[in-house]
Length: 129
Image (tube, rainbow, N blue to C red; front, side, top):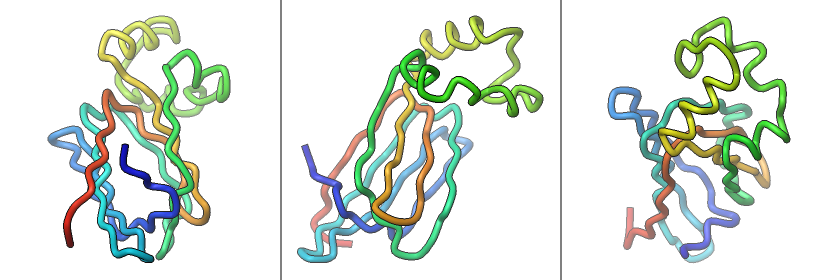
């Protein structure tokens, strides 16, 4: 597994049409360039996007595990049909599980933090930018 600890987020792409998010990162000490790609994305929430945001770690949780941590997550956004229109929380959880959705939590050393609701995360080291 490629280590992303202390990688700087140089940029990221949110591709709504193709339901993916890609982070372009660098570990400056060795000039190692890495992409972190999330596929089948159903939603995301980022805060504190600043230059030189640094990743501490990205953790992933099942829908049920994450809702134990943040049990008020959908309270405010339910009014906006996020991540889609649903009738109750049980229906939402069932649909997310049928679509193999997981919460990927971005824990920063500094800067950008948040979560991505996606099916999969792939990390790939690139030779150069």
